[in-house]
Amino acid sequence: MSDVDVESLIKKSHEAKLLAYCPYSKFQVGAALLTTDGKVFTGCNIENASYSLTVCAERTAIFKAVSEGHREFKAMAVATNMPDTYSSPCGACRQCLLEFGGDYDIYLSKPDLTYVKMTPLELLPLGFTPTSLNNAPKSDN
Image 1 (cartoon, helix red, strand yellow):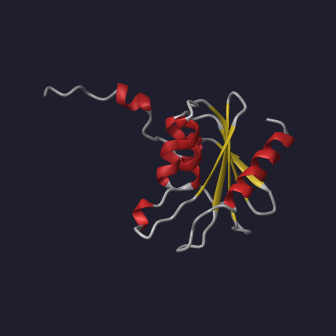
Image 2: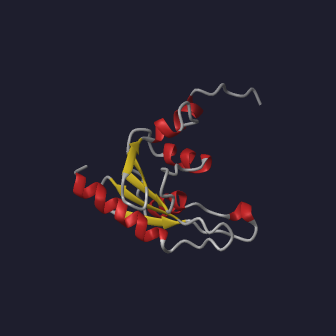
């Protein structure tokens, strides 16, 4: 991806962050997911008073893309308001990212638009992937 494309995707993640519904944690997260055919799907975190029902920005963007027929991703940008550190996806989001491939780009950004680039495999080494099911022993039941 060109620097301009990366910057555009990061900016979209910061715009999505502003739509976060986070009355409990006050921790806004935005994500922008680029598919291999050039479409961008954004997501924000959506909290719930029953905390376990909260959905992260990364999964919101993935679910939107998949629900519209997109399953091949080129990149995702993730934005938070953390000025001193790059906030990485939670374990559930790492697993969802890895479901759709291990080698596309994940850009973790700060409010000043600086970023680090990783891949789903770097975020979740030795993760459980679709191929893990192919290697599972068959049950005798």
